[in-house]
Image (cartoon, rainbow, N blue to C red; front, side):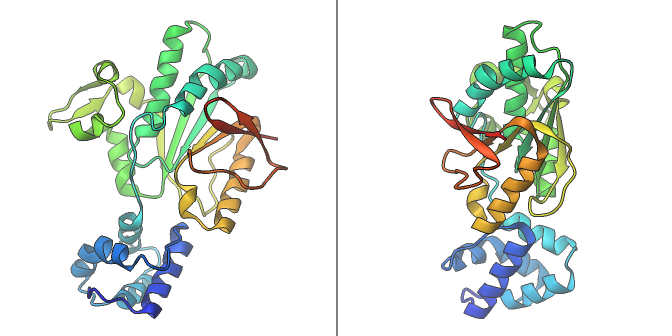
Length: 276
């Protein structure tokens, strides 16, 4: 692909990307598009971004579309990211929901889970809650983790990570407790933690059927969407929450509206949202 991208081609690609997965590119991100799509363009023997968009329109559901979305998606994550959401889960939400749910299963959704660090961190938090408060959490806990990228989901299901990824937010104590050395030289998460998470391929812009949840983690992904798409996603997530269920957003994200759907809950530190 040539380094120069015409305004028309860039606009066409921006439109495709937003319609396909919700990512809203800024007006001056041509360099990002060039760097991330260079290999795909070479493999497809395409000389311009316009040719790529044209081919994507001819193959709306093919592997090329998946590869382009995957290349443009940021899969940046780490273990126990920001820390306080997991403390809120352990110290506030689990004690409340254990009492509230009775014998009913406790269901948690990790949306835009990337390579699995967030849902596995949730599973570890639940396991530690069980050990510290023996006998309190008798309910079955179901963690559903979703992402748009089939590639990252395949890696997440394996639960195998290189040492560099393990070191990003995971304490040595947790590494020893929840991981074992893998034949490849990395580390693989223990089967009891891995079995707690069910990974599914989901596009947040499209209709999905996942059932109702008590807690939804949707962190550090809404910043990539337009205001309209963000509102639609939050409204659908409200429909997916049980009454009184909780939504946890990223540190730099907020609802900016929907007062009829959610109420803010101050947790010191951190803010979460309760479904009305």
